[in-house]
Image 1: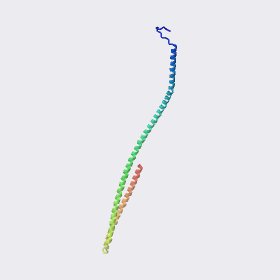
Image 2 (image 1 turned 180 degrees about the vertical axis):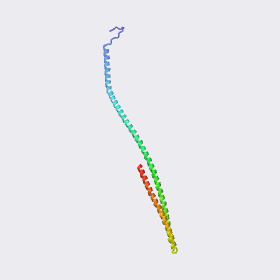
Image 3 (image 1 turned 90 degrees about the horizontal axis):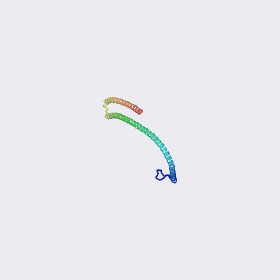
Image 4 (image 1 turned 30 degrees about the vertical axis):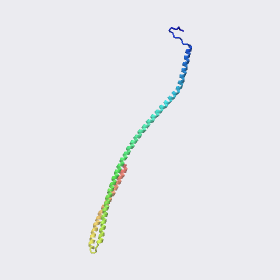
Length: 192
């Protein structure tokens, strides 16, 4: 041992060193226990991290797939809307054409009705004239009346021939219109 007052440090006692050694060994055991306790937790956390990263990758893939499906559906929706608009326009045009044909048919029917009514009126007038002739018939005027009747008959037959010719012509025009409308309807159906 060195003397007190000299520059040397006193040597530690064996008991103190042994105490420190025991204390350090005890602390080492505690640290080893803590490391042993923390290691499984760390391993579990590493496993959870791997699972979470895998889930993130899967979710990102699903998200990309859904985005692609969404874009496809939006495109299909736009196409459907355009098709709908085209069909709507085509239907509108067809309805307008159909309305035009209906108007034309109504006009033709009205013309025919007027002609028929005029013809019926003329026929009624002729019948009335015949009745008057019967009523006014006089045996003394028979030769003159017969002559007049023949003239009237001839005029009426001529008028009737003219009317029949007009009716025949109107029937032909009506048939022609019907054929034309059938062709237009067929053409419209083909374009649909």
